[in-house]
Image (cartoon, rainbow, N blue to C red; front, top):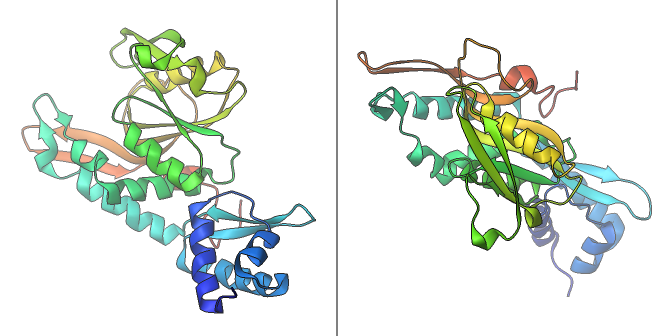
Length: 282
């Protein structure tokens, strides 16, 4: 049964956003709505223009008989600044201070709206990369990993500190924690990651970069490639980091327990992301 154009546009938009970076043929939509491909093409132009206007991404056209369209997540620079400022405000609140200068972060990492911000920002930063899977380490990075994976349309694998019988056979490595200089262990199920995958590493916090470096070393056991590293909060560190390239949303500049203040600034996000929606790539 043929549907109205307004219904087509709504359903088409929903389908594309539910299947990010997935190639969808015009034939699929034509059959779905019993409409001519020329009408579908006109609808897709409207969807593309609206996506770009609203700052949610764009549509990428792939020509040829096997072609179609892909929804590519994106974000406008001014909107990215708003989201990061919102995250900075939440993190810098003085009631997060715990004894020893630690920060209480569980509520933020469990807030679906804030994690949606994080997922959108990282997805926009890495949308042009070929990414097969998101990797993080248990447990605090899991929410971030799933938020990013939702926008990029890829699965999540979780590195653990110890082996579990439910994981089957595993690969484990020892690594040196960059800040504490302690030897620690990472374990990953052999079934969770295909050989040769391109992996985006994400984590909630980084000081020296030991955990991220450990995950990179673990990926070598799977002949996998690191497509990028995304860090929610990095902390200022006086020594050389154990990794070279990463994108961070926030930078923890200092904690004053006596004065009950937390110094938080924007991370290197705007320095590392080459371009934003509506801008030409450098």
